[in-house]
Length: 215
Image 1 (spheres, helix red, strand yellow):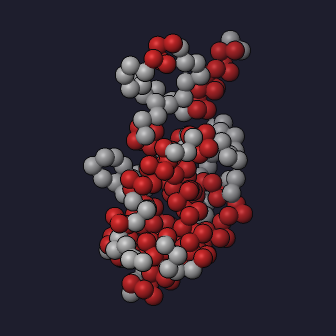
Image 2 (cartoon, rainbow, N blue to C red):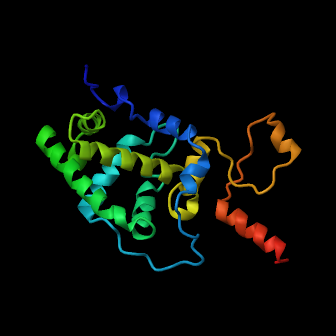
């Protein structure tokens, strides 16, 4: 079996990652156990990652969905902030496995490519991730890869209330117009692409709740 030379030949390209998101109902990326929306600004929590761990994770998700002419990438969309906030809030039990995965990925990069993962060229980063994704590393690293890819999708396309999908860039990328509590006949005719509402799901829910109570 021929080993892909880079992510451009493997099933982890930006196009493949984004295409996979269009096959998953948006609710599946936003409704799995998530906390209540923040009611008010709170002091920033300590990061789940050290500076070095964050660099590895940023380099990882940046190769999954890099910024290009079609739009912002995972880093620009706030994927790191989404993952960091999730670990601090509703996924604390996943933190040890993710941190161990980052360490293992860095060790594998150093062993196979001669340098820390974040310091590699894009081509060498792609070679590392391709090897991991195609089970040429360890089963544990493959599971870690799959989990980070899933979290990247969540961070790209989640409700912005959770820290990802900054400026609705993820929704714009897949042409999701945003939350709308009611849809009229004209909306359903779909003669033209829907106009972006640029409204978070929680904001739409709060507005509807306020209307009900006469606020």
